[in-house]
Length: 69
Image (cartoon, rainbow, N blue to C red; front, side, top):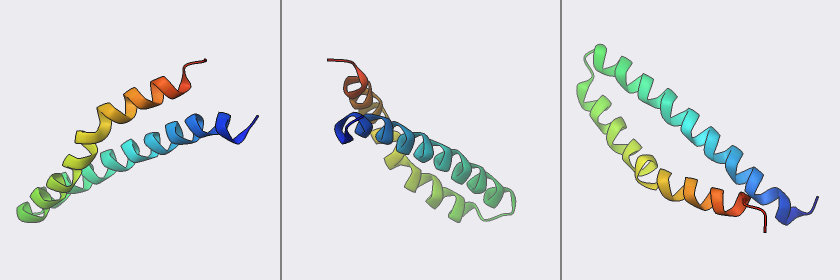
C-alpha cells in the first residue's frame, strides 16, 4: 500500500476523532451549563460551530478520495 493510498484512510480516522472530540466537548459544555457556568457553556458551543461548519465539506471530500479510480 502506498502513502497516497493511506491518506484517505488517515483523513477518515482523523475526522472520526474530531467528531468524537466534538461530542465529548459538547457533553462538557452541557455539564458546565448545569453547574451554572452558562457563559462558559455558550463559549464552548460557539467554538464548536467551526466543526459543524466544516463537517459536510470534510465528509464530501473524504467520499471522493475514498472512491476507487
